[in-house]
Image (cartoon, rainbow, N blue to C red; front, side, top):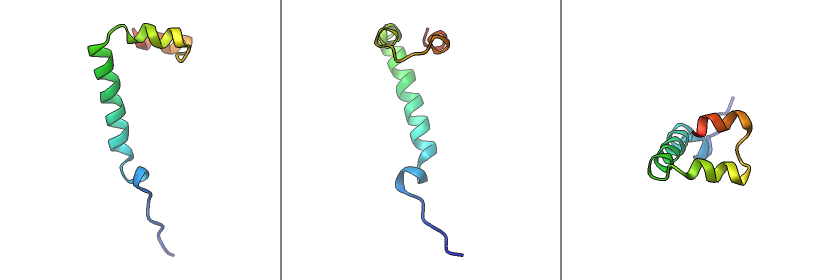
Length: 53
């Protein structure tokens, strides 16, 4: 059975997840009002809004 090589994105999926989390934490730290902006855009569902604060 031949093994198919993973794509570049799949190979480094863990790295992308941690990078996205770090960017999110950085935005929240340096731009605390960004949560209000995201809520105004309508990107956050009501339950997620608690996590943004």
